[in-house]
Length: 241
Image (cartoon, rainbow, N blue to C red):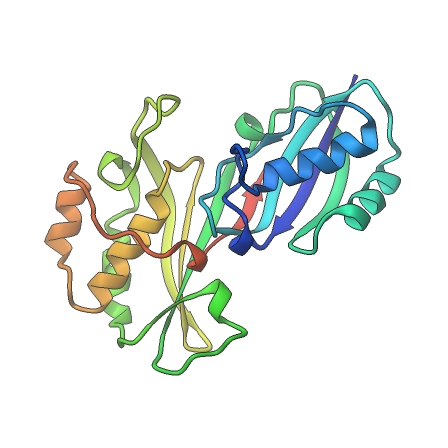
């Protein structure tokens, strides 16, 4: 038995997220179909996390097992020749059978990009949330510090049956401005569903002056957060092994 691992990237615009859903185009479904074609068998593909519809990934790790051996370089070439252009395979390698993409990764780094501008750039539009407001970056930086540490993020998340533990430790939450785009970067071992988009939503509305620090503290105390940033601005930047 061989445990194949894939480092991939994808533009999420035309996908309904990672996880397979009936009659919908998903990354997992598209990649599983390609692997099934190459291996001649149904492949059970495990991903490092779910992503929402429209969310992108510069790095994403998945694995699957098969008794069939496929030379690594040949598999990389074959996948990139048959997959659609909005998915790319960066690397293929073999891991121990104990490796599981969902449970074996050490952490993830997400970046949310917001573009405060009246002007529209079609080369940026698929990857940022453009808003016609100026943002107070210093206020956003102070707000970002509130998230550092271990908190109950149930107010920021849609909790699924599999997610019994609402406590998440945020290792990094920082704000940077690059070429007029404001980047909100968040790193943790794990995240809850919608959590990063709602954290970003809070910081953006704080930067617009439409939200206060005290209100964010209330959300961290369990009050439901209604501020969900648009999916297209979110990218899974890195996965740590």
